[in-house]
Image 1 (tube, rainbow, N blue to C red):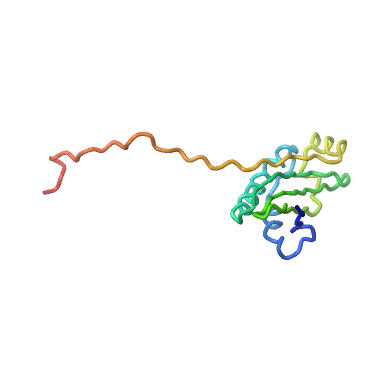
Image 2: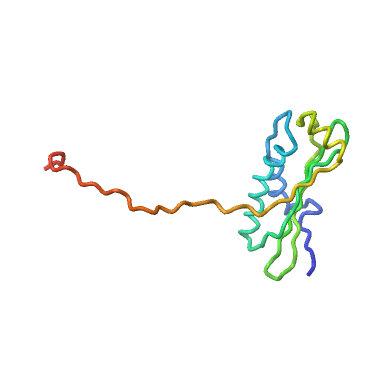
Amino acid sequence: MPLKNLFGAFGATTSNVIDTFLSVIISPNMELDELAEIYSKKLDSIIRDEQAKNLSYVGGTFKISYADEKVFNLSFELYFQDRDGDYVKKGAKSKPQSTEYLNEKALDELRGKKEIVYEIDEPEEPKISAQTESPEIRKIPKGKRES
């Protein structure tokens, strides 16, 4: 089964995914896990959008990569399977991000490991609680009704 790479060249078809991915606002002094958690919400949204197009989510990764003392990069790769059984790869890479967004512990870890990879699980379905009891139905007291 061939792999269709729809996002390798960052062409026009990728703009919505990249815009969604890059529209996350991060704050200074973050842990690596905090950064991954913030982006996971956007990645869940991207996965759901692709599932709505009849693609089945297979798996993926979110990467935080050390570039140098001043910048790091963020990227993701998501893998789907279409109705024909072909695999589809979707992904994006950020512009360099300032290391000022990371706290010293996070920067030290990234500097040492060069790249931190997080697996991306399929988003959980929103939980809708079913009402198990009937609502209480009350009668309007006779003295309160208008005649």
